[in-house]
Length: 374
Image 1 (tube, rainbow, N blue to C red):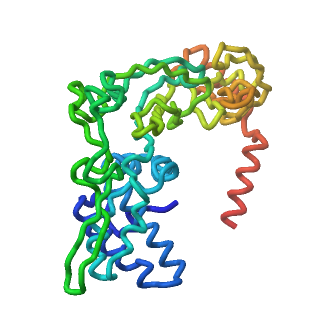
Image 2: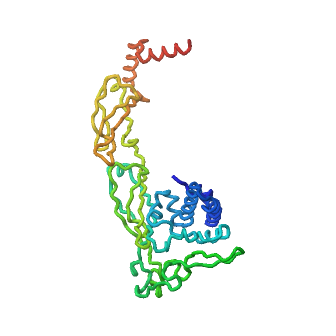
Image 3: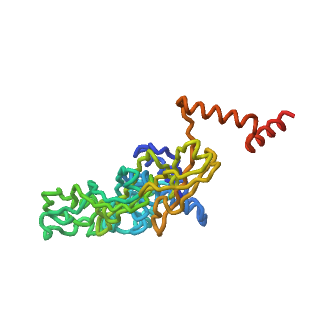
């Protein structure tokens, strides 16, 4: 994936002035007029333009910093570049003799549909909420079309008229004199701000912007099985678009708390079960916790500490298909720190009866030590 900061060779903390300066340098370096027929230079020139288009716009830049190019692709996929190149084209006229600026103007982009910016929301979940699913109400602040003027920006729609200066195009030709002669370039109209229309009486509620900021409550249904850092999307619930563009998306980042009993890895659950020494030696029934209940589980005689057992289907539910992961528990043999007199007597008797007998595990370990030191 492209990194717009690397394309312009700037730091991620670069100021607007530094971004503009870097863009001017790169645009002059790769302009097609200097590299006729060079497809690579043409490609880099387009990348430089796109990088500047995004990073010079505060809203797009903040979205790009969070979501990368995926978050802003709709801004240029639906309507091409939205402008912002007038100043740099003016600087390039002196170098290339003028005339090329209009080729990139793309018409009145101020009127082109533009999708709204995305919104990020972070939410904390308990371990059980993530495993079993839950519902949450969240509240966001977003821009919407003005409820008074319905996005027109005018107190009275009949008092919106075509700009007389630019004839509704949103652009005007500007003549520039230089030592090489007089050149023309296309720039946004100062009278209408590039919109192509003039509002005689701006809306009193939104001051002519056509937008207002509101608090919006959203209901979130979180499915069973989500994990830490999962992302849920709510399309169309972000900031309102312009000129008929779609509203942005709300990205909900889930943060899941750790559990005191279970450890989760993917859809499998892991838990340590303490067992008594006599149960490990003789075998027996132990209690094992699952997500829904505590069950009885028979372990065989001679179970060693650290031995693990798997119970299929008792883990975390799968998100997009039926079934669940497994529950894997490991037994840990308890060694008492205090024993009664009767218990001590029995243990001493057992040790005396065992004497110097070695278990198979002990024999194997002693043989490894012997081989090592020989």
